[in-house]
Image 1 (cartoon, rainbow, N blue to C red):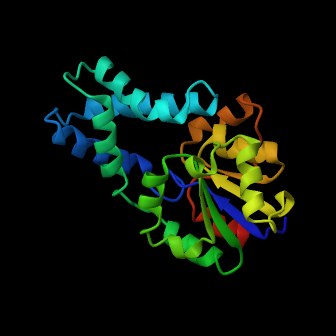
Image 2: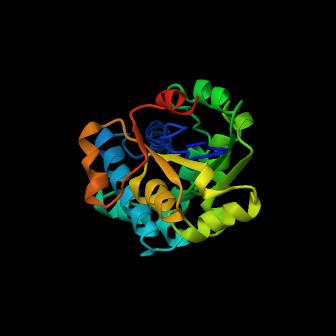
Length: 232
């Protein structure tokens, strides 16, 4: 396939979100005098992921998600007293400062940018996503950065991809590759939009999930460097 455009997810595709989430939660727990316990961080990660999946399914709105995940976290982990709104504000500030490129991301993006027009498509809070992505060494290689909060709709909804196309009218699904780690947002969205997809899935044990969900990514890779073999 002859592509002209590449659309990249950010979290755990270009930037290491797991590390950023871990470090931001350590900082936030410490700010409020709570234990910086690894079990607490793992619990928050699970609760946060559950809430974002709820958002993808339309079961919760973004404004509610932002604070409700911390209310659930405080309740389930018996963190008292906790003001979920204040805790959220502190966490968002801390997270927006954590920018860690994935292994090989800068090298790969530098090489691909010489041949393709590239843009970022990411679900998330605009302050957090732009705060992490814009100062990173990856930003110069991307023509545009689309954040769902600013767009007004989330991946995998077609309205998200329609909005991207309005801003980049030269974009054609048949000449575009969507690259990301999430089956439910990146791959499902790309497949529904009618474009080729590349699933970044380092854990081979998770790969059968694609077929179980009725999805067939065009490519499946373990690390970003494999894109060079596919695209160059």
